[in-house]
Length: 92
Image (tube, helix red, strand yellow):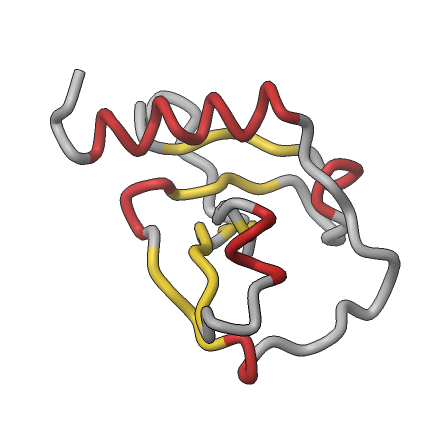
């Protein structure tokens, strides 16, 4: 999953949730609401896709430490995800 909520929200003690977009190794490159990400970008064992139409919230208490190093997706990729989310919401 990719945490997409703003860093102030993520760090705030007043917020007990974060916004996330799930990752899947089932890749549909032509799906306008999916963003292809390489294994190197995500830290997963295989390439995958972020599925913006499945954005959800998770409780911070339910998050677990990643097995490897935490990876940061580039700002450009986060903006591409935002565009995919706008498409999923029909807000273009």
